[in-house]
Amino acid sequence: MGLLLQSLSMIILLMWFFCLPALRAQSTNGSSLSPARALDALLQAYAYKAFHRPKTGIPYEGAVPSNLTGINITALRLRSGSLFRYGVAKYNEFHIPKGVSEQPYVKRLVLVYQNLGNRSATYYQLSGYTYLTPVLGLLAYNASNLLATDLPELNITATRDPISIRFSDVKSAPDGAVAKCVQFDLYGQHSFSNVSSNNQCSTIQHGHFSIVVESIAPPPISPTPSGEGKKNNSKVGIIVGSVLGGLALLMILTFLVLWVQKFKHRKKVQQMERAADVGEALHMTTVGNTKAPAATVTRTQPVLETEYAP
View (cartoon, rainbow, N blue to C red):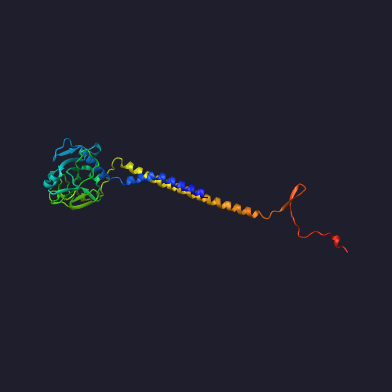
């Protein structure tokens, strides 16, 4: 029985090690970047490629890959001190006032501008609302290495006047609908504010911005980014395979335990039957060609009848 339990323990350990890579893969996929954050990292790399003998304070338009056609990016390298003292009067739709600082501090930084165009709703889905403008992004990165990729964003904050965004391409709002400014932070959370005159919104931090209006009809289904469907199918396949494998292992172990219990019961019954059949051994004697039991001792000795005769 001890050997059987050891075997079962080994089977369970082996199955656990086989399932561990699949569980790690699920954990890794679960902690992967969202499509919007992955897009930010990709656009940062392509924006830095626009720098060729760059000059400080000059914006450079970047080129995106063909599968992101419709998105526009621009990169602007600045000195940290100059940004704080003078700001940037006009950077596409953004006006950056004096007093903007970054954390952590760097000597030079790059402001990456994004215009997501007709892909705005794909990466920034907002249930119950319709976009009146494309989503615009303003993110800051360290400029010490213009060949770097996957850089973390710097936290820029307007300490005096807010940063203003004046949208130039604004659709007309439906009758009776009230347009609102929406801001998305780097964690995917959004907040609303009022639209000021001239289709203008304001912020004190970096992020992505747009003007939206509440929609009566359900929002259109956004197209799935290329490859995302296959990844989802792969995740589902891994999860289903793990569940089926676990159920199969559980059934095998259940049948094995039941078989062991039945085998032990049958063996015990056989031992009891043998014990019942085996009593006190009888002496065997041969009578002719046949063996028959014979008592070794008789209780009463035979007496001839003639012995009692008078």
